[in-house]
Image (cartoon, rainbow, N blue to C red):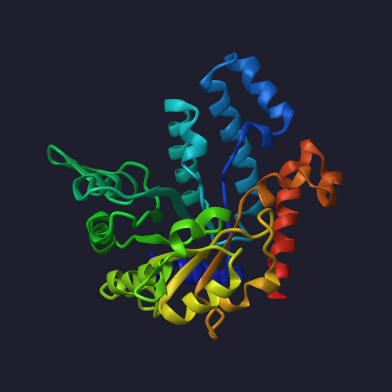
Length: 304
Protein backbone atom coordinates (compact mmCIF):
# COMPACT_ATOMS: atom_id res chain seq x y z
CA UNK A 1 0.00 0.00 0.00
CA UNK A 2 2.94 2.34 0.47
CA UNK A 3 3.59 2.01 -3.26
CA UNK A 4 0.00 3.02 -4.00
CA UNK A 5 0.25 6.02 -1.68
CA UNK A 6 3.40 7.20 -3.45
CA UNK A 7 1.78 6.60 -6.84
CA UNK A 8 -1.23 8.71 -5.86
CA UNK A 9 0.96 11.52 -4.51
CA UNK A 10 2.92 11.60 -7.75
CA UNK A 11 -0.22 11.41 -9.89
CA UNK A 12 -1.92 14.31 -8.07
CA UNK A 13 1.36 16.17 -7.49
CA UNK A 14 0.04 16.93 -4.02
CA UNK A 15 1.47 15.49 -0.76
CA UNK A 16 -1.81 16.34 0.96
CA UNK A 17 -4.17 14.36 3.15
CA UNK A 18 -7.54 15.76 4.22
CA UNK A 19 -8.52 14.96 7.79
CA UNK A 20 -12.19 14.00 7.88
CA UNK A 21 -12.68 14.98 11.53
CA UNK A 22 -16.25 16.28 11.62
CA UNK A 23 -17.62 17.95 14.72
CA UNK A 24 -21.26 19.00 14.58
CA UNK A 25 -20.10 22.59 15.03
CA UNK A 26 -18.23 22.31 11.70
CA UNK A 27 -21.27 21.15 9.75
CA UNK A 28 -23.45 23.81 8.11
CA UNK A 29 -26.73 24.40 9.90
CA UNK A 30 -28.89 23.37 6.97
CA UNK A 31 -27.36 19.87 6.93
CA UNK A 32 -27.80 19.37 10.67
CA UNK A 33 -31.34 20.75 10.64
CA UNK A 34 -32.36 18.50 7.75
CA UNK A 35 -31.00 15.43 9.53
CA UNK A 36 -32.81 16.29 12.77
CA UNK A 37 -36.02 16.92 10.86
CA UNK A 38 -35.78 13.43 9.38
CA UNK A 39 -34.51 11.50 12.40
CA UNK A 40 -35.18 13.65 15.44
CA UNK A 41 -32.62 14.73 18.02
CA UNK A 42 -30.86 11.37 17.93
CA UNK A 43 -27.46 9.83 17.39
CA UNK A 44 -28.76 8.66 14.04
CA UNK A 45 -29.43 12.26 13.03
CA UNK A 46 -25.93 13.35 14.03
CA UNK A 47 -24.42 10.46 12.09
CA UNK A 48 -26.51 11.29 9.02
CA UNK A 49 -25.35 14.91 9.15
CA UNK A 50 -21.73 13.74 9.35
CA UNK A 51 -22.24 11.44 6.36
CA UNK A 52 -23.76 14.14 4.17
CA UNK A 53 -21.02 16.58 5.20
CA UNK A 54 -18.23 14.09 4.47
CA UNK A 55 -19.70 13.11 1.13
CA UNK A 56 -19.82 16.74 0.03
CA UNK A 57 -16.17 17.33 0.92
CA UNK A 58 -14.97 14.11 -0.71
CA UNK A 59 -16.92 14.82 -3.90
CA UNK A 60 -15.38 18.29 -4.08
CA UNK A 61 -11.76 17.30 -3.43
CA UNK A 62 -11.05 13.69 -4.42
CA UNK A 63 -9.55 14.65 -7.78
CA UNK A 64 -6.99 16.90 -6.05
CA UNK A 65 -5.74 14.74 -3.19
CA UNK A 66 -4.15 11.31 -2.76
CA UNK A 67 -5.56 10.44 0.65
CA UNK A 68 -7.98 11.13 3.48
CA UNK A 69 -7.60 10.58 7.22
CA UNK A 70 -10.84 10.09 9.17
CA UNK A 71 -10.32 10.46 12.94
CA UNK A 72 -12.29 7.63 14.53
CA UNK A 73 -13.11 9.52 17.75
CA UNK A 74 -15.25 11.99 15.82
CA UNK A 75 -17.44 9.07 14.78
CA UNK A 76 -17.30 7.08 18.03
CA UNK A 77 -18.86 10.00 19.90
CA UNK A 78 -22.10 9.22 18.03
CA UNK A 79 -22.11 5.58 19.10
CA UNK A 80 -23.02 2.74 16.75
CA UNK A 81 -24.59 5.07 14.13
CA UNK A 82 -21.37 7.08 14.11
CA UNK A 83 -19.22 4.00 13.57
CA UNK A 84 -21.52 2.88 10.76
CA UNK A 85 -20.84 6.24 9.09
CA UNK A 86 -17.11 5.80 9.71
CA UNK A 87 -17.23 2.50 7.80
CA UNK A 88 -19.41 4.05 5.11
CA UNK A 89 -17.00 6.97 4.74
CA UNK A 90 -14.01 4.63 4.37
CA UNK A 91 -15.83 2.63 1.68
CA UNK A 92 -16.90 5.76 -0.20
CA UNK A 93 -13.41 7.23 -0.20
CA UNK A 94 -11.93 3.99 -1.51
CA UNK A 95 -14.56 3.95 -4.28
CA UNK A 96 -13.25 7.41 -5.24
CA UNK A 97 -9.72 6.03 -5.53
CA UNK A 98 -8.38 7.59 -2.34
CA UNK A 99 -5.93 6.03 0.08
CA UNK A 100 -7.58 5.92 3.52
CA UNK A 101 -5.61 6.43 6.74
CA UNK A 102 -7.65 5.49 9.78
CA UNK A 103 -6.57 7.84 12.57
CA UNK A 104 -7.24 5.37 15.37
CA UNK A 105 -4.02 5.67 17.46
CA UNK A 106 -4.36 2.13 18.75
CA UNK A 107 -1.76 0.24 20.76
CA UNK A 108 -2.12 -2.28 23.58
CA UNK A 109 -0.85 -5.66 24.75
CA UNK A 110 -0.19 -8.12 21.96
CA UNK A 111 -3.54 -9.89 21.72
CA UNK A 112 -5.47 -6.63 21.91
CA UNK A 113 -3.31 -4.96 19.29
CA UNK A 114 -3.81 -8.02 17.09
CA UNK A 115 -7.58 -7.51 17.36
CA UNK A 116 -7.28 -3.79 16.60
CA UNK A 117 -5.12 -4.59 13.57
CA UNK A 118 -7.60 -7.19 12.34
CA UNK A 119 -10.48 -4.75 12.75
CA UNK A 120 -8.95 -1.88 10.80
CA UNK A 121 -6.41 -3.19 8.29
CA UNK A 122 -6.76 -6.96 8.51
CA UNK A 123 -9.43 -9.63 8.53
CA UNK A 124 -11.15 -12.21 10.69
CA UNK A 125 -12.12 -15.78 9.85
CA UNK A 126 -15.69 -16.81 10.64
CA UNK A 127 -16.29 -20.42 9.71
CA UNK A 128 -14.85 -20.76 6.23
CA UNK A 129 -15.25 -17.06 5.42
CA UNK A 130 -12.55 -14.39 5.67
CA UNK A 131 -14.17 -11.04 6.40
CA UNK A 132 -12.91 -7.49 6.79
CA UNK A 133 -14.08 -4.86 9.24
CA UNK A 134 -13.34 -1.20 8.56
CA UNK A 135 -11.00 -1.70 5.56
CA UNK A 136 -8.60 1.23 5.92
CA UNK A 137 -5.28 1.15 4.04
CA UNK A 138 -3.20 2.58 6.90
CA UNK A 139 -3.81 3.28 10.58
CA UNK A 140 -2.01 5.37 13.17
CA UNK A 141 -0.43 3.43 16.04
CA UNK A 142 0.60 4.44 19.57
CA UNK A 143 3.96 2.81 20.44
CA UNK A 144 3.87 3.42 24.19
CA UNK A 145 3.68 -0.32 24.97
CA UNK A 146 6.73 -1.04 22.84
CA UNK A 147 7.27 -3.84 20.34
CA UNK A 148 4.57 -6.04 21.90
CA UNK A 149 1.95 -3.46 20.97
CA UNK A 150 3.29 -2.63 17.50
CA UNK A 151 4.39 -6.01 16.14
CA UNK A 152 0.82 -7.30 15.55
CA UNK A 153 0.19 -4.31 13.27
CA UNK A 154 3.47 -4.91 11.43
CA UNK A 155 2.56 -8.55 10.89
CA UNK A 156 -0.79 -7.59 9.39
CA UNK A 157 0.94 -5.04 7.16
CA UNK A 158 3.20 -7.79 5.84
CA UNK A 159 0.32 -10.21 5.32
CA UNK A 160 -2.24 -7.80 3.87
CA UNK A 161 -0.04 -5.26 2.10
CA UNK A 162 -1.22 -2.43 4.37
CA UNK A 163 0.66 0.21 6.36
CA UNK A 164 0.85 2.09 9.66
CA UNK A 165 2.06 5.45 10.92
CA UNK A 166 3.66 5.26 14.38
CA UNK A 167 3.44 8.27 16.70
CA UNK A 168 6.98 9.63 17.06
CA UNK A 169 6.80 13.38 17.74
CA UNK A 170 3.23 14.62 17.88
CA UNK A 171 2.00 18.14 17.10
CA UNK A 172 0.20 18.95 20.36
CA UNK A 173 1.69 21.52 22.81
CA UNK A 174 2.29 19.08 25.67
CA UNK A 175 3.95 16.38 23.56
CA UNK A 176 7.32 17.26 25.06
CA UNK A 177 6.28 16.21 28.56
CA UNK A 178 7.21 12.65 27.59
CA UNK A 179 8.54 12.73 24.03
CA UNK A 180 11.36 15.23 24.70
CA UNK A 181 12.67 13.46 27.83
CA UNK A 182 16.33 12.57 27.50
CA UNK A 183 17.18 8.88 27.73
CA UNK A 184 20.83 7.86 27.34
CA UNK A 185 21.57 11.36 26.09
CA UNK A 186 18.91 11.69 23.40
CA UNK A 187 15.19 12.49 23.43
CA UNK A 188 12.62 9.73 23.59
CA UNK A 189 11.30 10.55 20.11
CA UNK A 190 14.70 9.64 18.63
CA UNK A 191 14.56 6.25 20.36
CA UNK A 192 11.10 5.70 18.88
CA UNK A 193 12.44 6.70 15.45
CA UNK A 194 15.12 4.01 15.78
CA UNK A 195 12.42 1.43 16.49
CA UNK A 196 10.36 2.60 13.52
CA UNK A 197 13.38 1.93 11.30
CA UNK A 198 13.75 -1.50 12.86
CA UNK A 199 10.06 -2.40 12.55
CA UNK A 200 9.98 -1.28 8.94
CA UNK A 201 13.09 -2.97 7.55
CA UNK A 202 11.11 -6.00 6.34
CA UNK A 203 8.21 -3.93 4.97
CA UNK A 204 9.92 -2.06 2.15
CA UNK A 205 7.96 -1.13 -0.94
CA UNK A 206 9.34 -1.00 -4.46
CA UNK A 207 9.15 2.81 -4.16
CA UNK A 208 12.03 2.74 -1.67
CA UNK A 209 9.92 3.57 1.37
CA UNK A 210 8.72 1.36 4.19
CA UNK A 211 5.07 0.61 4.92
CA UNK A 212 5.88 1.44 8.54
CA UNK A 213 5.67 5.24 8.65
CA UNK A 214 5.94 7.87 11.38
CA UNK A 215 3.83 10.74 12.69
CA UNK A 216 5.85 13.92 13.21
CA UNK A 217 4.06 17.19 13.89
CA UNK A 218 4.50 20.18 11.59
CA UNK A 219 4.58 22.36 14.69
CA UNK A 220 8.08 21.09 15.49
CA UNK A 221 10.11 21.77 12.32
CA UNK A 222 13.54 21.47 13.95
CA UNK A 223 12.70 18.03 15.31
CA UNK A 224 11.24 17.21 11.91
CA UNK A 225 14.60 17.97 10.31
CA UNK A 226 16.39 15.67 12.75
CA UNK A 227 13.87 12.88 12.35
CA UNK A 228 13.91 13.09 8.56
CA UNK A 229 17.66 12.41 8.68
CA UNK A 230 17.22 9.56 11.16
CA UNK A 231 14.45 7.90 9.11
CA UNK A 232 15.41 8.34 5.43
CA UNK A 233 13.26 5.43 4.22
CA UNK A 234 10.23 6.22 6.38
CA UNK A 235 7.21 8.13 5.12
CA UNK A 236 6.21 10.85 7.57
CA UNK A 237 2.60 11.80 8.23
CA UNK A 238 2.69 15.48 9.18
CA UNK A 239 -0.24 16.86 11.22
CA UNK A 240 -0.40 20.44 12.47
CA UNK A 241 -0.59 22.33 9.17
CA UNK A 242 -2.91 25.33 8.97
CA UNK A 243 -5.21 25.48 11.96
CA UNK A 244 -2.39 24.45 14.34
CA UNK A 245 -0.10 27.12 12.92
CA UNK A 246 2.38 25.51 10.52
CA UNK A 247 2.77 26.76 6.94
CA UNK A 248 4.38 25.35 3.83
CA UNK A 249 7.68 27.14 4.42
CA UNK A 250 8.04 25.29 7.75
CA UNK A 251 7.85 21.86 6.15
CA UNK A 252 10.67 21.65 3.60
CA UNK A 253 12.83 19.53 5.92
CA UNK A 254 10.13 16.88 6.28
CA UNK A 255 10.67 15.87 2.65
CA UNK A 256 13.54 13.97 1.08
CA UNK A 257 15.53 15.36 -1.87
CA UNK A 258 13.32 13.29 -4.20
CA UNK A 259 10.36 15.47 -3.15
CA UNK A 260 8.71 12.51 -1.44
CA UNK A 261 8.75 11.13 2.07
CA UNK A 262 6.04 13.27 3.68
CA UNK A 263 2.27 13.58 3.61
CA UNK A 264 0.88 16.77 5.14
CA UNK A 265 -2.49 16.70 6.89
CA UNK A 266 -5.02 19.47 7.27
CA UNK A 267 -8.33 18.80 8.98
CA UNK A 268 -10.51 21.70 10.10
CA UNK A 269 -8.50 24.11 7.94
CA UNK A 270 -10.11 22.35 4.98
CA UNK A 271 -13.35 20.78 6.15
CA UNK A 272 -14.43 23.94 8.02
CA UNK A 273 -12.84 26.36 5.55
CA UNK A 274 -16.14 28.15 4.96
CA UNK A 275 -15.96 29.42 8.55
CA UNK A 276 -12.64 31.20 7.89
CA UNK A 277 -12.59 34.83 6.83
CA UNK A 278 -10.78 34.19 3.55
CA UNK A 279 -13.42 31.67 2.46
CA UNK A 280 -16.47 33.31 4.05
CA UNK A 281 -17.78 34.33 0.62
CA UNK A 282 -18.72 30.69 -0.01
CA UNK A 283 -21.03 30.48 3.01
CA UNK A 284 -22.45 27.32 4.52
CA UNK A 285 -24.46 26.50 1.39
CA UNK A 286 -21.22 26.11 -0.56
CA UNK A 287 -19.01 24.65 2.15
CA UNK A 288 -17.66 21.96 -0.19
CA UNK A 289 -16.49 24.54 -2.73
CA UNK A 290 -14.74 26.37 0.10
CA UNK A 291 -12.99 23.12 1.04
CA UNK A 292 -11.88 22.62 -2.55
CA UNK A 293 -10.40 26.11 -2.68
CA UNK A 294 -8.64 25.51 0.65
CA UNK A 295 -7.06 22.36 -0.79
CA UNK A 296 -5.90 24.25 -3.88
CA UNK A 297 -4.41 26.97 -1.68
CA UNK A 298 -2.68 24.38 0.52
CA UNK A 299 -1.14 22.65 -2.49
CA UNK A 300 0.14 25.98 -3.77
CA UNK A 301 1.56 26.85 -0.34
CA UNK A 302 3.39 23.52 -0.09
CA UNK A 303 4.91 24.00 -3.53
CA UNK A 304 6.18 27.31 -2.23
